[in-house]
Length: 168
Image (cartoon, rainbow, N blue to C red; front, side, top):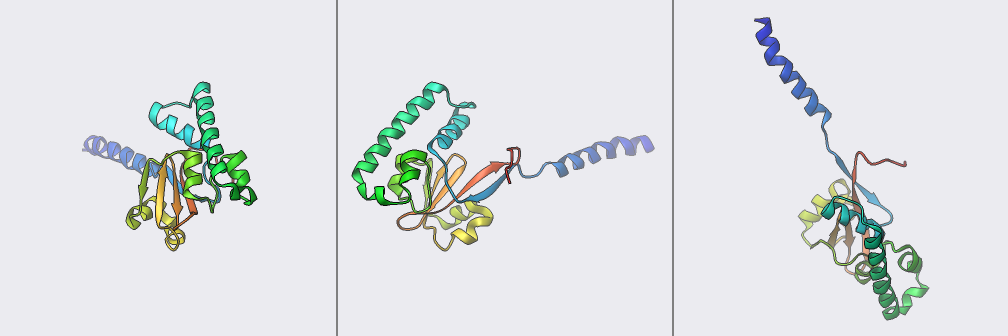
């Protein structure tokens, strides 16, 4: 009788213990600065190829970004007087207040665009309360979601693996 109970309850206890240890593997965090163009390239390469981009892939990507950013800055000379100029020209990073054109120049077209409030809320998870008052559209990049109001970036969230190092 004891052997029968042990044979039944031991695997059950192991299964329950394993399930208790396995929780969410990702968390969503709101960030004050968005992704750089290289962040998006690395995430895209990891998702599509299962590896970091090669040296040549990075070089080609950087050349393409340089051309898009230079063209955007020529078409919008008023940006030179803006505090965002450094983020666009040198850091190649999305910042709050960036226009849709700036984001596309830095990161290319998103994997997905949505204006559905329910989907935007699901993507933002616990941060939706802060973003819901301003966000009208969301652009999804690998691991990142960028929220826009009618004209500019109003917030950004990213999915972070619980296994990534934390620098709090």
